Image 1 (tube, rainbow over the protein chains, first blue to last red):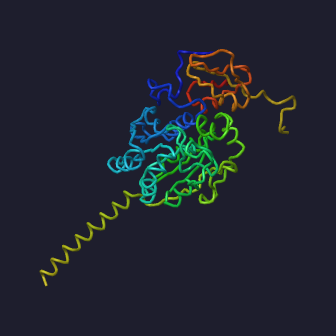
Image 2: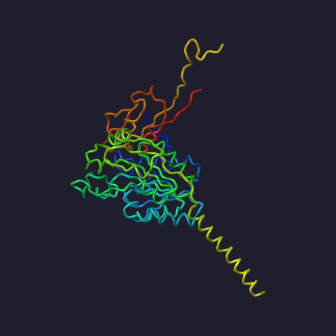
Image 3: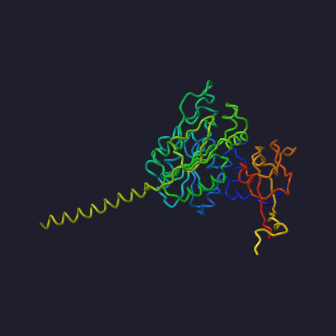
Length: 291
Length: 87
């Protein structure tokens, strides 16, 4: 039942001259891009006012495939670029889509400080537990005991709990889903696009070519089946106490959803105080001259 | 007197109609649509596409409810569904 005249509904939102994309067969990134574009569409935001910034890596290619204003930055510097973009043009909805190696290894400092300042942006971190594009080196998220090309006897470094780091740094919206939960992912992205403040979303995604091959995980389809068994939805879980491992539960959900004053609101408050202070100063000075 | 159900069987459930469109040459053969289809409408075909993968084919057209799950999960945007409601 092939119909060549018909167009795929996603073709409006993707750069079809760039397709087929470079991602491997059974990678979760294509699903995440679809969910992202659907979420933006459902949020009802003008697509001319959405900007996507991404770093380096497999996930860094997202900016090249989405038909929005997008920028492909240097390694780890996606968040500083997005902060500048947001503060210079505050009408924009800025989204950062990048990998775990980009956001937490080289760009870890930028991420925690953007979360501390509560800059109004949406960060989507695609976690595949390894540096996929460069050949499977150890990432800060590689679980204990997992094999990678720089850990042939198993990894002996304690991994980051990405959700916990973001929550501890002070993000105002923290969520975790897997690539299998694409409907919930769409809803979360829709919610994040409308919400003010620093929003962090971790998406656990299969890496069939590198991580699964080193750890005998099978194909991406087998990993998605595994996610189906392992994932549990619990919105009230404490983000500090749900690290990811090779086995065991993947606890998903929206863990933190609170309102804090954003960076720009604080800047405005500071300026207002200063203005009031200088006005009072002039008054006092006049009084002194009168006295 | 009100019946909670019609005495001679319920009304026929609403039947959806539509079409499933597969771009065979875009497919990378990951099998997500085949595995996660709720009604097992799709299966791998025996033919090869341009890239050397086996694209999905429709085996039970009547079972399909045109829910669009295959469209949402496909990473290569190689399959999409048009649903037409029958009134």
